[in-house]
Image (cartoon, one colour):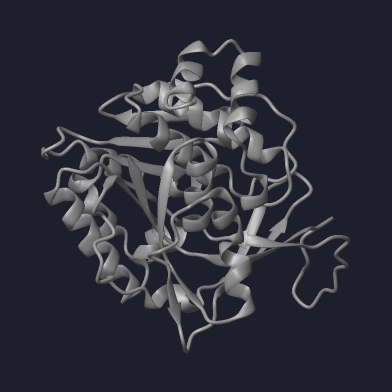
Length: 316
């Protein structure tokens, strides 16, 4: 089944920094990465590379950066028929400054992403899951388009997941809580958890047609933890991290792929942990996304048979 991914498509710049500059400072950059980015692009490409099927709903400009933004998704085989071209606004751009420890700080220009409109053709027509990236709820008309798709998916009893972002929690925390009864899974990292925490878990547990949702906490080197309908800690796969950009997107992709194949939430989180861990070992985001074979090798090294069985579903 197809996963409809609604989110940003950006051209990404990334650079490792020996130290973060002070105001007015001048810091040399020894290397510069340039490639596809945006949570929408990353998640969709990761789903395809893990053996799933993804359709991307995003908006880019009519400019050279658009081809950069979509290149990784196109190489991965993502359905790009729903991607829109804006004649006036440029493609979004994101600069990721990477610390010596692999943590990243983002500087984003959203560009054409914010003008996303509801397409005439139904993007949910053959979907089995709707995944929403948090930035898609920041500004209208992209926000209105995304909310209409969440409502449609809910009416059709399709699973819906939301990957939070700090700008959304700062701008509209109440919107996240209002959406909670329509969500099957909410993904959050530690700063996002700190912003909502127990309030979100309570909202996810509210009566709904699904009987309560899951909060999947992405904890980096400590793995992940599930709250809500299922509560458990899921250990990490230890790796030597060099760049954590895109790890959360890979985790979400692995989790969604596994759940669509009938995996239990803790197995899905373990598969997500494996995908995210492999991204951390490579520079970049979309360019670092692992293949099904990459994840299989890591799972096999740790004798993770349940996750290997899920990964093998649909494999020829």
